[in-house]
Length: 122
Image (cartoon, rainbow, N blue to C red; front, side, top):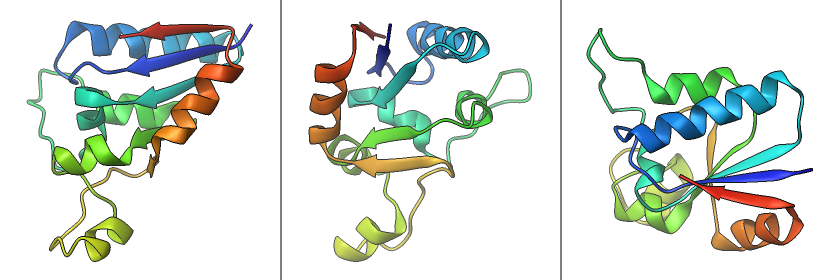
């Protein structure tokens, strides 16, 4: 059974941490799953986000999974997150998309929804 985890909650939300926990469990059990970061969930891909020493860094936890981490390009740009290619295209002075994440269009979400057996939104 394939699962799509649609992460729409900000990285500071408990829901974002539940999504990560489920992804880690699915990964450990070698179960098929995909993720997609959308709405406020795209903020997890901001490499400039700072975390105090007493808090876990949700971005690096996702990176440790070493899976594909697609991020909605429109939602990311609207929240000040961009890769080098889009920074050049939109004349933004720098890029801040964290390593391992990639900006993609909503067509990818549509494909993922169509091909999954279950969808869980966090």
